[in-house]
Structure formats: C-alpha cells, structure tokens
Length: 305
Image 1 (cartoon, rainbow, N blue to C red):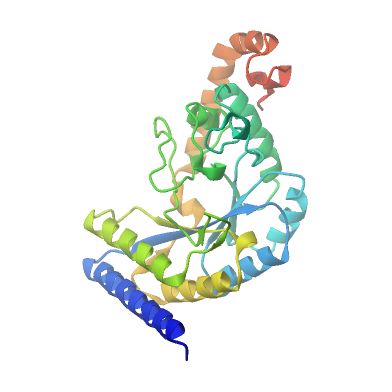
Image 2 (tube, helix red, strand yellow):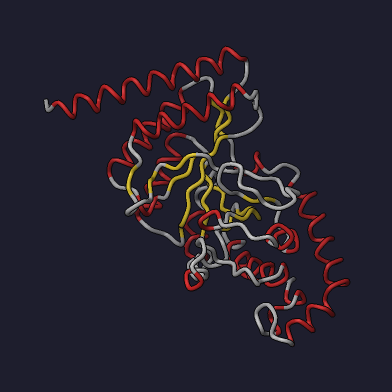
C-alpha cells in the first residue's frame, strides 16, 4: 500500500476518534447535539438530486433543500410529493450576481435597491417555490450576501425566517435564523470535496466550541451542494450521516423544528406588510415613477400580495 494512502487512512481514523470523543463529552453533559442539513443550488429534478434524497431517506435524516426559484418548480413539486421528510426553502431571487460589474462581493441585490424592491423580487420567487410540497417561507441568500434592507424586505414578503452562514449578521435579528456552520465542499479554484480530515477537524472544533459555550439549544448546520459532489463527496457524506445517526449524542432537526411559531410569525409579518402598504405606498409609487428602485411600476409595494 502506498505511504500516502496509509497516512491518509491514519489521519481519518484519528479524526473520527477525536470526533467520537467530543460526542461522548456531549453525552456526558446530558444534552443532545442538535444538527440540521441544508443542500443548496437545486433548481429542478436531476439524478444527483434523486441520489441525495434517497440517501436522506435511507438514513432517516431530515433534509432541507434551498431551491433557486425558476421555471422548474412544477416538475420539482411532482418529484418531492413523494418525499414528505424533505423541506424546501427559497435560495435567493434568481441566483444572478448583479454586483460583478461594480466589483463588490457577490450578491443578487444591488446596493441601491430599497426594501420594497427586494420584497417584490423575493415574493416573485416565493410564488414559484410555494408550489412545492413542504415549502417553508425561509430565505437563504446566495453567497451569504447581506443587504441593509433585506430583513425588512423579508418581513414585508411574509417570510418567517432566514438561513445564512455561521453568525450571519442580518440587521435587527427580528426573524428567527437557522444557519449553517460547515460546508462539505471547498470553493477556491473550483468546487471540490473539502476532504475527510479537514471536515472532521472543523466539525469537531465547532461541536467543542458549542459545548464550552453551553449553547445546548443552538443547532449546527451542515451544508452540501449535490450538483457539485464527486465520488469522494458522496462516499464521505454517506459515512458521516450513518455515524451521526447512530450516535446517541446527536439529534437531527427538521426545518420546521428550527423556525418556531411559524404561523404566528407569518401572521405578524403579513400585518406588518399591510401597515407598510398603507403608510408607504404613496411614497413608493412616487419613487417608482421617478425611476428609483426598479424603475417600473412593478417595483412598488402595491405589487405584493
């Protein structure tokens, strides 16, 4: 056996051992380690998506798909009707990087857009996503891009939560969040598997940090991208899910478990949207007429349902 393979295998064994030791510490604390799983960038049915869903169902692990709203929602709805354990949230408005021309960080949302323009675009996306069974009005921005008006826009559009990366700072923090903390992939110089040792070390550090902080009720999010997985990614993901499902310290959470009191929050945001319409519609119509925001009448808050 080549030396590099033996060395790699030994690193894997050590990393798995350290993770198991950390999970034992969680068991000793009397608390469960809460995990949840989000997969990004889906658009419609595919063989890779079939494989992902089959893996989740085989291991009985709740899966949340962050779906980009486009014309494939109807086909995806038909497929997911047979998978009640799979939740769907909205992944952006269209996943187009509009800031590339101005040289800023990747974002769908231009800096000059106000809350009404963002809410309009978010709502148009939700009209496609809500056709899919088990769709939850939670917004996951592509590239984890923030915007000063995003939270108010989400509340205007009736969303009950958002999902970013780690402690992604959304202004105000009025909406509940379900964030992801570790990605199976690495993205510099092209998408590829992070590697078992690196993933396990990072995951173990996150678990240890959470335990030391006594953040017992805070779920740790694991992020995947099924369209970018290679054979090594798939193999490790299956092994990881099996190990975490079997460990008594771990409790997997579904999206609806993470966003509490969703109906109440949605009612509050709809009431807020109505109040915004009454108070701000005249100003917004004037702005739309002057070419502010989208520069078209559809950009006004009156376009919201």
